[in-house]
Length: 280
Image (cartoon, rainbow, N blue to C red; front, side, top):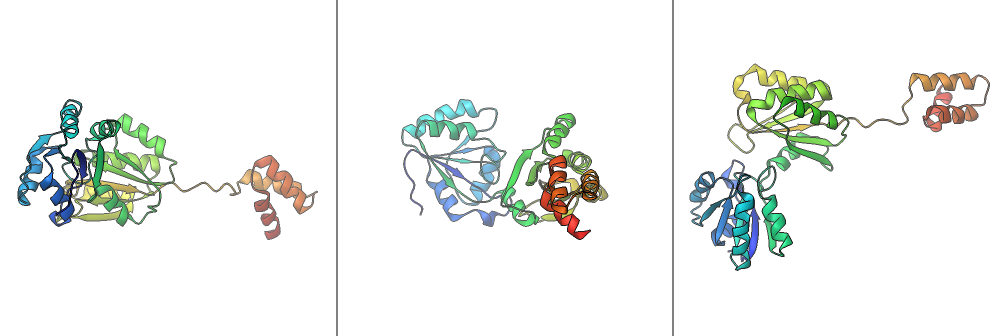
């Protein structure tokens, strides 16, 4: 059995689908704490009952978090132990709990993570795009105009982009991405992670729209969308104007001096221009 400390707030990850992903440590902590703060107590009770965990539950969601947090903090100060869980996965990742954690830390309460499943990390791990740096956008705005405005801000982002999206907005969302990022931008749609109908579909953004529209059932479930980052601009790339200026100077100047002056005029690397001259 895992030993737990008095007056500690535990942030506990729960399965996102497959119950075998529920770690023994997470189960042990949830059995020992005095109270579990859950996003939806009815949903979480099914999970806890499956593992014979009888710890009392307290509802904590986006509409009551500030009111409930005060009582939870009082209990923590009185040496009760409390665990925070969400409906699925790691708490706070597009789920409630930020205010509780922030306030607990401000009041010198110990907060301990009990790691486990996360749809974000799971999808990123199989997408095949760079994962050393990425941007998690969570759910985009529900209204079309606000969603497109947010996507416009991200159009030149070179890091891998990760989104959550609701089934009823999914096609519109990917359509907007295709229009703003470009139809040929590569992406991976991950559906129903760790569940029976888990699907990982790789294609262009326009290809994903077509795939979704081909069969209505493909638009049902829980989704993570991983989008390839924008290509990084090549600052040394030649444009027609830079090459024209260089060639004009090259007629009357040495290669070295023509490259130097053309670089100062156009901003293109003089080494790149010099290499062009050698190629010619």
